[in-house]
Image: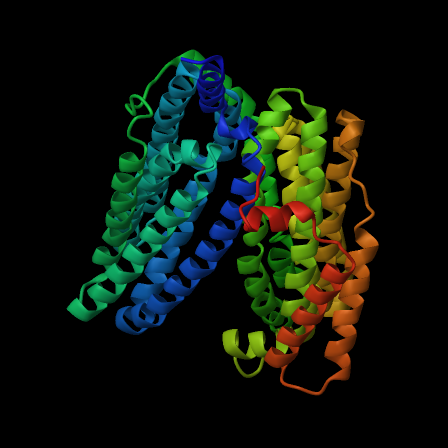
Length: 497
């Protein structure tokens, strides 16, 4: 064999040994994967909405109320059992290599299984002791089994996310939602009773679990493990992050809770209608940024501040651009959105929704800097940032809601989100000054937003048409101002190298 041929073979071997997170293709795969995740999330949301009207009409007010009650209880169990384990798992799996990865994953599955089982049994016991209807107690046990299957599957899916196989992740999520929606509609046609709808979550989770195991073949043993030192290490790291996640869930909903105490029932309803729309949209930032998180975690684990700073800057720029676009679109289309979601009698929710739309910008930035701190294992900083936001939300709602009603609560929510962004950036700068964001893009986004809003105010047209027009003007402006990172276009055109 010639020396040139031997060199080519060695180069190919070296390339094969390079992990995807260390390769030049990582950024492009993450960007395209984030696009897949967002499209998948929207499609899943639409699939879910298709089955809801059929369920409500079939089950009736009482049984559907039971279903929502059980779903709420299971949601709380999921939040407590999750405890930040998935994001922490992605962080660790992105840094570890070889047998350490498999050992960690197996123990994480074992720990997740144990925590979820305890959570479901405790919740079922509480509902039984407190005299809840038998349908609720039974529903918690059945839906809890579905949660156990789903969270276990979610843990097995960590390697797919960490290895940037985000198309597969999106396909699995769509598979579950499609299966669930199809089962719901099928059960309605068959005239099934309430328990069957709880079992649907078990079946959908099982289908997703089998598909995940199939995709994970070749990753070593998938048998759960119970190595206590590993469990304790994970729990010790997770506790502050779990507390931060719990506070994060609460602070964004504090205004809704306090409104019932400091304002009228009417104002609370007006705020709730707008808040529900923003709450659904606010999931998108986390779907986007978690797609890039493995790259951030890898760079942080390697103490590569240069790569981490570069990646964070690009995530910040993209997050700001997309966040502003969604805020403009939702704000301009607010009359249409409220009419569709809430119906007549909620006209005052339009102004509230326009205020809350600003929280979409801050939500993208919150996700960006929260994952930046997580990549550095700054768990206490994440906790303190969320606590500051919670305090600001409480004070802001107590001060503004009594005199300004739903608008005051919306403003308090936006201020709380902004305080979280500023606090997270403060902690990041203090931990790693080299990671401070460059704000040169801000004026470009502000100018593009002003142009888009100006057009929306000047042109007489239906809200939905204005929203599309404003979006086009904004997109044209950010392109003309060269605000979009060039890496984004190269990734979409598959020119990674």
